[in-house]
Image 1 (cartoon, rainbow, N blue to C red):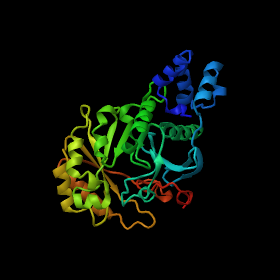
Image 2 (tube, rainbow, N blue to C red):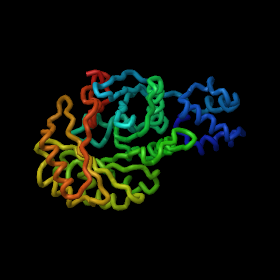
Image 3 (cartoon, one colour):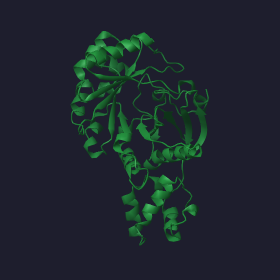
Image 4 (cartoon, rainbow, N blue to C red):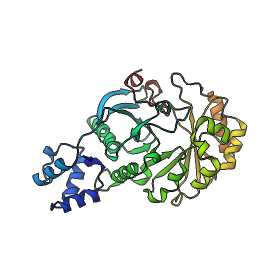
Length: 346
C-alpha cells in the first residue's frame, strides 16, 4: 500500500475525484497533516468520514518511528528512524542564526556512491527510500519540534544516500514540501545535493527549481577519484559539462561543497584548480573541515590552514564560506551519519 504522505495535493484531489468524493477535502487533509501536524484521521474534525475511510483503506498513514534521539552540546538534534521494514536511517536538525532550523534529510538506506571520507559510504546501499518515507521523516521530526515550540524553516538533501540516485521519489517529495496548502516551503529554502551523477544532473530541468549543491571535494581528477569513486565514471570534464546545462534562475549560484582534508586537497594547487573550474559569478564555495569518525584515515586541517584556504579564494573574487561544524559530538556532522543504533549512541 502506497503512503499517503507521498501524494502531492493534485494527486490527492485526483484520487478523491475518481472515488466520487469531494476533491476540496484534499485541502483540508493537507492542512491537518502539514500545517497542524496531525496525522490521526480521528482528529480531522472537518473531514467527512467517507473521505477518511477512503484514504485509510487505500493509503498507508504509517510514519517512521523514532527509536533514538540525541542532542549535541551545540543544539544539533540527531534522530535514528525505523522504517516499515525495520531498516533504519538518520536525520539531523541543525540550528542557526535568526531561529533558522534546517533538517538534513536522508533519501536512501545507506549509499552506493562509496565516498571514502564518508561514514555512510561504508554501509553500501541497502535500498531506496520511498517518497512517503522521505516526507515522513520530516513529519515525525516536525511533530517532535512542535512539542518544543520550534518549527523547521529549511531542508537540505544532505543526509544518507545520493538524492539523484533516487530521483523520482525525491522529486515527488520536494513537490509535497512546496505545496502552498501544506508546508509551503519556498524553493530558496530547499537544497538538493549531489555527488555528481551526471545523467541525473542532465534531467534537472524537470525538477522543481530549488537550490543546487555539488559535492566537489577536489579540483583534480586523481584526488577526486580517490575520494569519490563516481569520478571514475563521470570525471570533472563530464561533470562540469552537465552543470552548465542546469537551468539557474537569475542571481542564483550553485554551491560547491568542498571537504578540506589535511595534506590531500588543501594546498596551493587545489586553489588554482578550483579557480580554473569555477565561474566566480555563478559559484559559491562552501568549505567543510573534515569531520573525523572512528576508523577514518583522513584528518582535519589546522584552523590556520582552513582560514588561509578561504582567504585565498576570497582574495581572488570568489564567494567562499566555511561551514561551522555542528553535532560532531554525537556523530551528526557532515559525513558522519550511519544507520546503526550503536553508532548513534556512541
